[in-house]
Length: 393
Image 1 (spheres, rainbow, N blue to C red):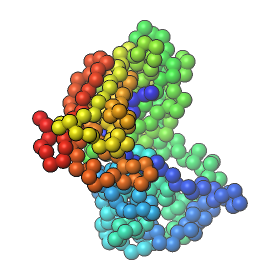
Image 2 (spheres, rainbow, N blue to C red):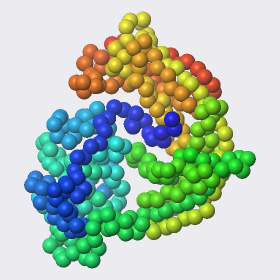
Image 3 (spheres, rainbow, N blue to C red):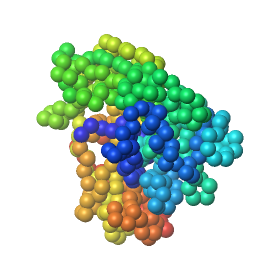
Image 4 (cartoon, one colour):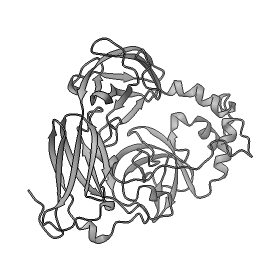
C-alpha cells in the first residue's frame, strides 16, 4: 500500500463520486460528433444556470452543505470549497456580476478543482436557499477547453473540430491543453526500479488539495515512465516503490535527492513533451504503528464504529505518509508501512454507515490529538476527553 500524498481534510469521511451520466447518451442514442453530444446534454437542462466567469478566490470549509437527496449530500460530513466568481457572460439564468458557488473539494467527491485566476464555463444548479452548486458531473470546465459548448450556446456555427467524434476530439485536443513528461527511475546502485509510483505534484496556496498526476502503469521493468495529461504548472517529481519483504520502500525526488527541501521544481506548459527526466531513489525502512483509544477518566469510549484514526506527515511533501483507519471493536487499530518522521495523530468521529449520522451525545467527546516522532514499530495511546471536561495537556 503506497502512502497517499493528500492533506488531512481527505482523511475526513466523504462519499464516493458517481455521476451516472452516459458520455454518449446511452446505447439507444448514437452521438457521432462533439456538437451532437453538446446539443443532447444541453437539451436535458431546465433549471441549470450557465455562465462564464473568472475565479477570484476560493476557501475550504467544513460541515454539511445541504440535506439529501440533492447532489450536495456527497460531502455532508466532509469538506468542500466555496468559490467566488466574477461573471463575464450569462447564457442561461439571471446572475449578479459576482456570485458564490459551492463544490466538493475535488478528491473523489465530484468537486470541480477550480484554479484561481482562470476563466471557466460553469453549469450550476440552484439548490437550497438560492445556493449555486456545480460538480464534475456537469459540463463545467475551463473556457479554453469548452469551445464546442461555447459556440453552441452562442448559436455560432460549429468548427471543423466540433464535427469530430468525441473520442477523436479529445484525443486531438488533450495534448494541446496539457503536457507530457518521460524519464527513468533507478536505485542507488544503478539498477532500474520497476513498479514504482511516479508522480508529478503541484502544491497550491489557499489550503486547496495538491494536484497530482502519475503514470497509471507504474514504472516499467527498465525503470522508464511517462506521465501524460499534466496541467500547466510547477511540479515536484517523485518516485516510490515498496519492498515488502524488507519492510522498506524506495523513495526519491527529482533530480535524485532524498530530502524534499533539495528537490527541483519542474515547470510544465501546454504542449510540452519533456524527456530524459532521470533520477535515483534511496531505500528507507517503514514501520507498523498500533493505536489504542482510551478515555481520560476510564469510562467507556464511544462505540468503535463511530471512531477513526488519522495520521498525517508533512503536507508539502508528496512522499509523506497520510492515512486513516477505522477503530476496531477492541478500541485499537494498526497501520503499516509508515516511514520514519514527525506526524500529527488525531482521532475523528465518523457517521454510522447505515444512517450517515453521528449521535449527538457522542459528538460531545473531545477527540485526541498528538504529535509524535516515529522511528520504529510502536504503540500510540490516544486519550479522549469526556464531555464537559478540559482537554488533557
